[in-house]
Amino acid sequence: MARYRVLQGIDYPPNKRAEVGDIVEDVPAQSVKWLLDSGIIEDTDKPTKKTEQPVVEEPKVEPVAEVVEEPAVEEGFDADATDGDNDGFVQDGTPHQRPVEEK
View 1 (cartoon, rainbow, N blue to C red):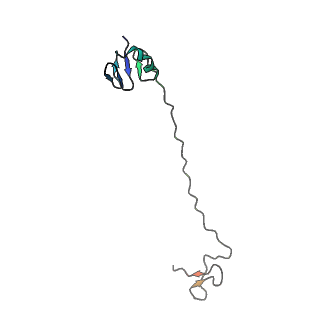
View 2: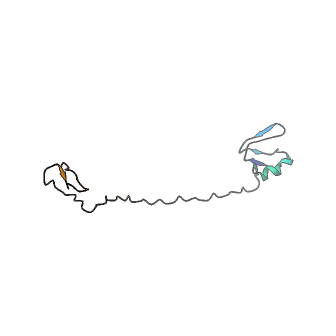
View 3: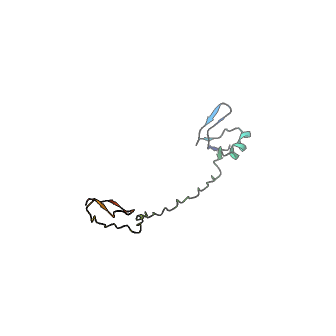
């Protein structure tokens, strides 16, 4: 009598249950073909068909250098301006007027 390895749990007559990995010999003859075709059982006398899973390579992630942009320097801006009149502001009367920075 043929022996079959159960690949998926099955109930079969008369009131029997086979779990994954069980070897059974009493599967009803009329059910064997569709159980084999469905991959629910396999014939233990035939070599198993092992399908190789394709190797999925992870994409290589290249580190990205962080680009730090210097603030744009507008024409007429003097980063080293001094407060010539001691009023607490540098570049008086220009769009670049600002309070004197404490150093």
